[in-house]
Length: 227
Image (cartoon, rainbow, N blue to C red; front, side, top):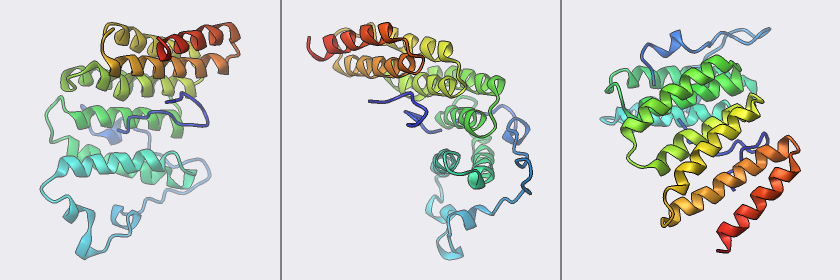
C-alpha cells in the first residue's frame, strides 16, 4: 500500500522547477546552533578524480540532475546533519535544470523535491504550496498520462500536506486523484491505482480517528478487489 503516513514517507515520486535560481527560493541557512558546513559533492559521494559522477554522467546532464535530486530526497529524510548536503544537491541540480526548456520533467521533479525540503527540513506551508502548484503546472505539460501525474504530483502533494498536518488538503488532493481514476472504468492500471489511493485516504482518516469514514473506505476497497 502506498501510504500517506508519518512513519512511511509514501510515494514521494522523487524529484523538481525553477524560474529563478533555487538558492533565491530555497532557505538553505544553517540550522540554529549549528555552523554552516557544506561538503563538496565529490566528498559526499566519496568519488575520486578518476571516476567522478560527472564522468559517469558525461554527456547526460539530465540524468546527473536526476541523480542529484534522488540523492537529495534520500538525505533530507536522514538525520539533520545531512540537510545542508541535501540543499547543496538541490542547488547543483537546479544549476543544470536552468539550461533545460521552461517545461521539462526535471523542472517538475525539482519543484517536488523543493516542496519536500519545505516540508521535512524547513517547514513552510507557503513554499510547499508554491512548489507543488508549479510542479503540477509543469507535469500537465510534460507527462502524457494521468497515471504519471497521480504518482508524481497528487500522491506526494497529499503526503506533504499530511506532514504539514493539513488533513483536509491531503484528503482533497487524494480525492482529486480518485476522481481521475474513476474516468477509466475499464483500465486495470487505473482501477489498481484507485485502490491504492483509497488506502492512502484510509491512512489519513485513521490518523484523525474518523472510523466511520475508514469503514466506508475499507468496504469500497473490498468492492474493487473482489468485483
